[in-house]
Image 1 (cartoon, rainbow, N blue to C red):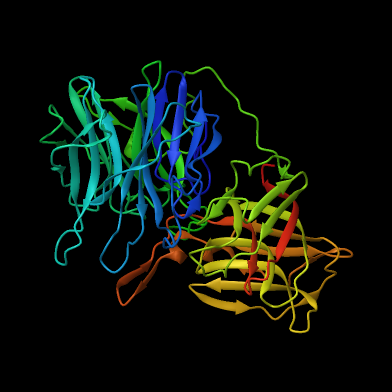
Image 2 (tube, rainbow, N blue to C red; image 1 turned 90 degrees about the vertical axis):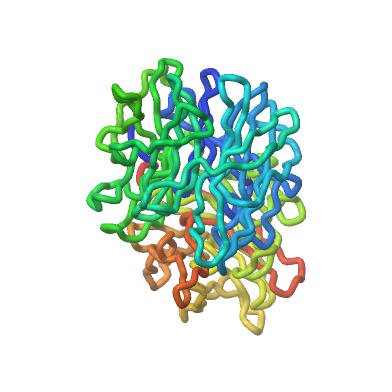
Length: 526
């Protein structure tokens, strides 16, 4: 069994077993549907069942910042209901964070999910713990906005009334973390008379780790494991899996324990991570004195297969010909759900109506999927009739509104159809000089290929395939490149990962659309 088990942009795992079924929820940030759910019966083979928050009734992402939106969901099951708590980050810069936290419930993982209920806005990374005595508790990190204070002010615990569906009484700080700081991501477990508090620390970069503390009482005081972190990569830059931390635990039917956690695979030693933060699993053993331990306290690429009956899943088709009424679970849409006002599907055709500019946080028209390998490609065939330079449609390699590359069809001032390449790095947009005419009455094939640190773009129109005469730096589509600070102040954070997608703009609101006949995604393994 090899890590990561969920490749590409799949961070902040919250893992749950209900009967013989395992569910794993991950963060989705500014992408719909919010909170991706993965299902497995053997912890080896995982199938994405889609996103929970798939409508504006459940989630509004309009206007959220890059790497805002959904942070660190918490998935649990009690009283015959799945409970999902999640944070919607509306603001995170300038010293403040607007972070409303919500609860939605459903009788089945497929839904229907209830209208979200506001829980609090005093921090993020909320989770629920359901104790053996029938009581439930809500945890979250507490954010203190005041200058001169420690912003990550500790882990709070609050009684949660399941009948009312909300917390009651007052929150209490039960843990302020270790000297590493940035204590967040709390999950609580009970075993052999102890309460185990698992937190993330050190930030989500190369100092990341997972810390365990325990207490005989749910309300503390909590004692930190004297042996150090449960898992981290911070002391060994040679490890293949870096940024290890943010764990959640699960016990199998056979009494084995596993930790689901974040990792990242940099393209160079402590370099840029184009694939974003991914999800891995590690076996957990319990020490003689009752502490959970991962061998060596570091992430392993190869781990033993769990003692569960194999349960393979059907692989996703390499080519999507858009033959279903809805987008498949591999696809995500940016900042707005896939509704009929801008997306329609028919067999052999995905029609995308043009949206706002590449910099918009309101109404983009982007349908994309995660980059899951250092060597992969997406190819599509697009039919588009642009009339002005304000009409654009094509294929993008995308990170956020300030970092992307875009091979697109458009029109010149005189209406001549053109194929152009547009790039944006750290908010600086460049229109590359090469330009090609094409026949707007015929489909054009576009292809984007990640070849390690290079991004190669090509097209085919009325003849042989042509490679665009420039090799782009793929590492600009990374968490590290997306992090921006101005005069020491945070501007933009990079928490997601590279995406490949189908993008359409209608900058003069003339009702333009583009038709995509298929999308073929290949990795070095497919």
